[in-house]
Length: 318
Image (cartoon, rainbow, N blue to C red; front, top):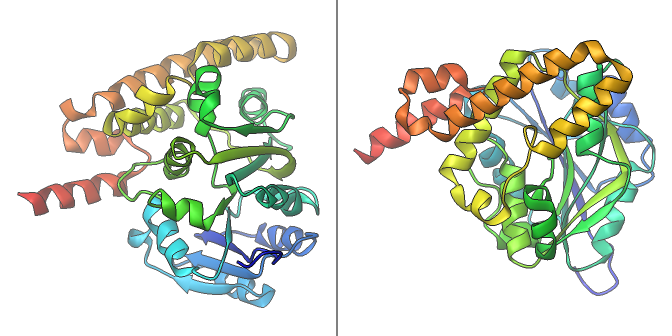
């Protein structure tokens, strides 16, 4: 990019049967005050017409088999291809842009050459329950922040927290740190952001760039999610060693959740306590996954394809 030139942008959208609400997602993108230069749909063999709808809107569509998709590996594959794009935006089809200025608010930060990545605020769905609402309000507050290596003592793991449901990256910064990893069970976005932070780049949380995106997890889903978090930290221990603790089971989150529920829905407190216990149990099991049989790990994980791939890689080394 030459001096004074506007950075070129690409939007990458991974999909698998985006569903009937995809038309609203496309309409929200159409209303944006800033339009990406390239729109790329990475589709995992949808059967509901998702690729056709995207093409009508102007997306390039690249298809792959479902078993070929991985959170980090697939995203990096297309980062490598988008050589002409200075900035790459990642969205998911369940993250609905909530204002016409959402992309503009996110991308403005890249006028600062020290910004390596930026992510937006995820608002709870309008039908979200109280526990779901608190989790998203806690993780995505209404105040923006620029985060750097200097913030690690205060923020811990939150220093490099980011979400590819709505995030943008300076491609050169991402490539400098090796891109998204293909070996992690999840959190490929936070892994890359952690590397950026340690290399001197800054990561921005922009609270005015908003999408509607949240999930109602069952007790079992929470257990499985935190089992995977434990696996992630066990297999890349440097992240926790450098950035410290944090997440859905830390003291600050738990206290905030209980205080919030006490005000708005006291009857949900027992469920919240059980969820916290299941998260801790799942996390600790994941953190000691090396002692567990492969079949059990696959059963407890949300990412069963990861364990199939892990076994294949281990067999190749034998």
